Structure formats: C-alpha cells, structure tokens
Image 1: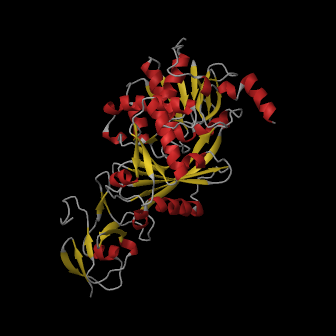
Image 2: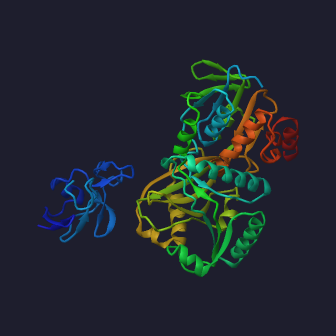
Image 3: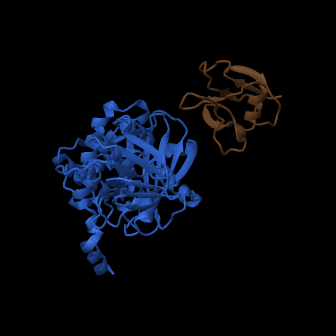
Length: 86
Length: 377
C-alpha cells in the first residue's frame, strides 16, 4: 500500500486511487482555503471545477486528477493553519 | 435643469455606476437599471492604464487616473486598488525606440515614467524571459477589482441611488420602457450599457470586440507590475481578424491575470480553445514560468468599440434629454471617473474638466455625423 505524507503525517492509502479519494478516506473533508477565507473541498471530481487544488510534492495540482504514489507529500490548507487537523 | 423626477441610468457597469455617483453627488435621485446580461466591467482586467495613441485618449486616461488616485484612500479593501504601475516591454530595437519616444512624450507632460534597461528590468521582474531590451515604466498606472468598485460607488450617497434588475426595451429623453411594459419617467436619461447600447439606439456605431482572459491559481511574488508588450499598441488597433497581445497582471490574491485577445464580429461569449491556446502560448513566450502554473478559470468579455476607438460622451444630438456614455472599448474602467465628470458636468452646465469635443456623439450622429457616414459610403 502506498504511503502518503499528508501535512507531515505518514498515512497508508489504497493503490490506484486519486489523491482526492485518498484525502476523503483519510477524513479530510476540506482541502484548501479560498481567497475569501472559506474552506473548500473537491466537488466535480473530473478536473473542471478546480476546487480540489492542493500542493503535491511542492506544486499546486488537482487532487482529483492525480493518482496516489508512494512517498507523495501533500500539504493541505486548513483553518487552523498548515499542519492542522482540518 | 429641473430635478423633479431625477435621473435614470441604464447599465450598472463601472461607467453607469460612476455616472450615477456623479449625479447623486449633485443631489439628484438616481434609478440605476441593469439587465444583468453580462457586461464588460466584471470581465475585464481592472487595469488603470495611461494610453497615448492619440491626444484625446491620453487626456481622458490621464485625467481619469488622477481621479482614481483621489478615490483610492476612501475605497474599501475589496476594491483591491494597488498603485503597482505598468511596464511596457520592449522586445526589439524598434520597440525600444517606441519606449524612448513614449517615455519622453509622457515625461514632458509631467507623468512619472522611467526607462529600465535590460538589467534593471530583470532586477524588478526576474520572471520575465531573458533577451528583452528593457521597459518603460508608468508609475501612476494601477489596478482595481471593478465589480467591487461599482458596489463602493453605489454606497457613497445613501438613499440616493436605487438599483434595479430590469431590462429596458425602449428609451428616450423622458424616460424608459421596461420589458413587461412599465414606464419610468425621468428628467435625465443616461445610456451606459456598453455593447447593448445599439440595441436601444440602433443609430449608435457600437460593435462588440471580444476578448479572452485567464487567471492562475495563487502564486504570490511572480510579478509586481502589470506587464504588457509594446507590440500591443500595433496589435489592438489592427481591426481585421483576431489579434493577441501579452498582458499579465499580479492580483492582490497572488493570482495572475493573463491576456489578451481582440476579435471583431463575434457576439457569442464562448471560450474559443484555439484562441485561448495561442494567447497562453504567446504569454508564456514572455513569462516562461507560466508553463508551470495552473490556470483555474478562463472567460471572455465583449468590449463596446466605436469606429475611432474613443467613447461617445455627451448629449444625444437627436434625442432630447438622452445622454450617452458608451463605446469605451477596453478603457471603460480606466476612463469611468472622467467620463462621469464630463457627462454629468455637461448635464449641469458646468465647465468641462477636459476638452469634451473628441468624445462628442455628434461625430457619428446628427447632421454632421450622417454627412460623414455618407462620404464614407
């Protein structure tokens, strides 16, 4: 099983799924904060709405269009700040 | 003038809002009507830009930017005013000569400009490609978020401006008729509805000029100035076929607005994938890091263009009581404050803040306008 590092915490996820699916299964309901300060979550699941953009290995990417890979580092924005439990 | 039934302004974009504010400031009650059919104000870049293709354009944009800077301290944070200046990029010897000429002309008028050579340019905007010859910086240019400026303007005179979602189907100098038949009367009617102006007044020579824009995710610090190519000047007035020009602007959110395209003869608002791709490719030629950044939205807007690229500001020569503030093409946001002062000043018989003749609707309408049209034909 691939291991993701989500906000510095190693987590095991199923192989072959999208980062968006993995984050949902790990309990991350929201993944980023909008410019207006509101929490945002993956919505369309098909690369159109742009709501699921997260930093993957240092680059902003769409979680729903990225397949999990062992060792991937993902940072989520939370209302508690980077590294929070949001 | 008498003010029994107040004023009606048709079109709640930046020009209509500025006119409504100027009318309200002089004590009139204003009804602002908007069909919400999608105008240019919310689609544009919000770039307050000094342009000097001709004396009239320069006078209008210079005076207006002074007024924007006077507004700035009172505007709320949502208006996103930033006095970050414009860099006109020179990519060839010819463009560098253009930058020098333009800079000398503007400096002689007292504008805050400076020429940056290649090294200085790379120092202030290191994300731009290497090999540029330099840039002319216009320090007074700025940016805003126009939809929020509209809201701010309409709040300035509480109780005096009422805004209403309504489609006007008929207009004259004594009032308007709404879809559904309701008639609203007014002493003054101002038409400020961009490309829809010709729907209500078919005699107006206003045509849509479509543009594409894209915006990236948040990448703070990539750019500080609005950067645009000097080739833009040649490109935008080439009226046949789509034209492209590089224009990139850092928003206060850290996002980058990327433009721009111009296309006549299209009223549809669909994004044209081919034009968008060429526009982004062209932009990446100036800003290579763009290839690594994510675009999160792209859209189009329709600029309301007149035959000589100058707006129509003033009394309609053939319709008593009807006043025009239309045809600003890409300069509606920049020129809104001075447009409103010229128009409302004329309504109230005040001395004009700048020479109003170049923008007089008579150049296209009425007897002399009709004669010019006949000679063209």
